[in-house]
Image (cartoon, rainbow, N blue to C red; front, side):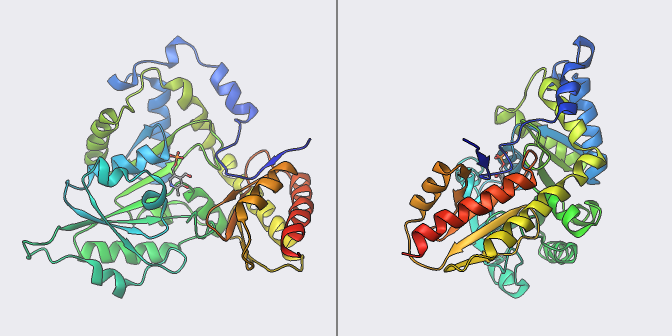
Length: 351
Ligand SMILES: Cc1ncc(COP(=O)(O)O)c(C=O)c1O
């Protein structure tokens, strides 16, 4: 049976070029990365720093680890940090900021990831008051996963930086999918990153590497981040073997490939939208399509049934199903998915 896996852009397999990059490795191209001696990792980090527009970059095992080392490097235990209420760090990183970082987490509401600065200001603690923990970091997620892959505009990030400077905060960007934002708006990725103190982006999502993420920022920040990566067990030895895919992923043509995913997401949206069903379908800005059920239904059963029909998806809440397009998904897969989604949704929602 045909399977179209739209659960996430993390399910991708490497491209042929990536496999070739791996095959071209030999002893001279790998070394002990904990000692800074792996030429392939060093090459990837230099390239990543250049592409993302920061002084230095660091290869980490995952987005979750990258976010955590970024938070740990820019805060002290007992500080309070501001996270958007549906952000991945808050919802899906196992509370590591609290458990490992000793950080107080305060969430801020938003409209599709964009905060109200008046509301944010209300959340800033009074530094002079000895009873209060200091607020020291603000985080923004772009594109925003649970808001449906929406793009937070560069001007908003710029305003967040202004706000952060005024309130003596560091600004962290969870840019797991920041290249989707750049490609979606057709602007250089640096338009977003230039306003932030730290950025994390994933190689293992739309860029379709099998493993790894990048953290980037100033030299001092990365020196500290490197220590925390070691503390968290992310000091890998001959890591060039997994980093070799990353240099391909950061080629311009490979980043531009994300346009295909966005086009497929739009096709999927248009196909599902044509059904006359009690659903609200969120118009995609990048590679994520969210279908919201307007009728109380056991969403898990729908997702299971869709899987049986060969279309894999995730329910991200009691009402919302998420479909993510990625490398390896083509137009035919989308047409197949539209048909199956229509069949399954009709069987549940027309009853
Ligand atoms: C916005 C965002 N940040 C961070 C992560 C964490 O990445 P990883 O799965 O590599 O830990 C994800 C993963 O889905 C994500 O969507």
